[in-house]
Length: 120
Image 1 (cartoon, rainbow, N blue to C red):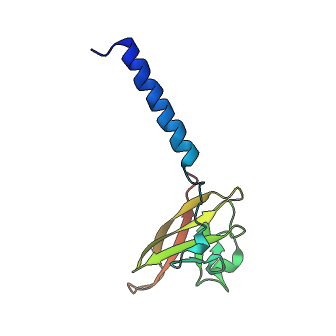
Image 2 (image 1 turned 60 degrees about the vertical axis):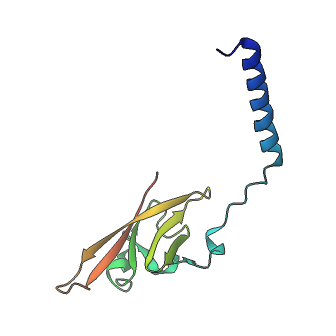
């Protein structure tokens, strides 16, 4: 059984170790999406589902359903045909965009992509 004195020593040593680790840890350096060579800003290739042009002159662009429309940057990461997209909100938090493809014609390659903002 561990005595009270030994438990105090263990807790003190643990606290010192955590404090030391916090002091010597390098500052956080979050990589910006644009700093990755496999990441591209694709905002210009998206159109809000509520924009009338989405069903006319911009009918080839990906639809986006988001509280920000295309006013906030949209980024996509792709490497060997595997990837994902996200939108950065005004506070700088990235939110994944789910992707749904809806058929637009009779052929298998005839579809339109809808990007759906995930607030969580």
